[in-house]
Amino acid sequence: MNSHMRGFPWVKFIIVLTLALIVAGGATITLRNNLRNQAKKVTLNYDGYSVDVITHDDTVEELLARYDIALGPGDELSLNMDERLNEETEITLTRAMEVRVLADGEIKSVYLTEGSVQDVLDKAEVQVREQDLVNMPLARQLMPNDVVKVTRIDEDIIVETESIPYKVITRKNNDLEEGVNQVVQEGKQGVLERRISIVYQDGVEISRSVVGETVTQQPEDRIVDKGTARFVNIASRGRTRYSQVKKVQATAYTAGFSCTGKKPGDPGYGKTASGATVQPYMTIAAPRNIPFGTKVYIPELVKYWKDRGVTISGIFVVQDRGGVVKGNRIDIYMEDQSQTRNWGRRNVTMYILE
Image 1 (tube, one colour):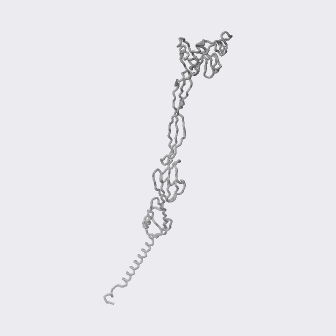
Image 2 (image 1 turned 60 degrees about the vertical axis):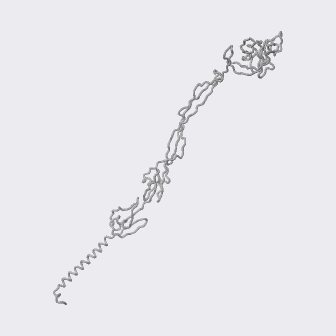
Image 3 (image 1 turned 90 degrees about the vertical axis):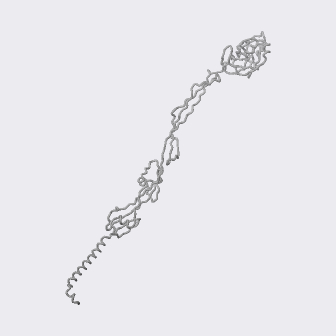
């Protein structure tokens, strides 16, 4: 041993070194205990898996960031992001599913972890009216990627008007001349109101139907009087009514050719089948369908006698019959045979007077 170290206080050095080693050892143990105390066992429930994690992170947010776990729209976390971690902390992350809602011409994406069709409609702020249609029951539980479609059903009531035609009533009027029509009342159309229901599906018409009809104005008939009166102008009487006009064949006869077969001087000579005595310019024989006493007007006889300087009324009375007086044949009484031969047989117009 060197002489210069003999006086060094070895005992004191050893004591100090021993104390330093003791202190250093205690610090190491303390550090090890602190590190052990900062590590935490955390349970993470995620995507159907449950994992125990030993971590030194202090908050939920730090833990999720360490493992690149990001929250999407609608995801639910059992703890707040700033929640501090401790031993036996359990974190549950529930991923939301996307459900699309089609309504009113828009597509909305809604995210939720669970719920019914009604829940997703509420979250999408889509109101469903009683008449609207939904493609699935409102109580149905949602599945991932569901598409909820709302079809709007709207109804509109419109009113259409339609004219109701009036009737034309034609009445016979014997005070009006035949061929003359007289409007007694002008016709007026009625009005029909028809209520029509139009149903729209998402704004597109799908049906229409009549739900009611109301006559708001009744039609008024058009009334027309049709003249049935027949008139013939007779010089001695003016306008005179007649009921029928016929084209007939007229043959002249005298008392000597009377259908009674009597001759002048015989009892009843000159008497007609009606019992009346024949009279010139008045008596005719007509078929049985024309009653005795019927008055007729024959204009051709007026002209015939006028050409011979005789003025007559042209009105004759049916007072006689004849064996060949049938159909459209008549006999006209004249005073003598020269007149009957002159007239012979001619076609005439016979107006049967009223």
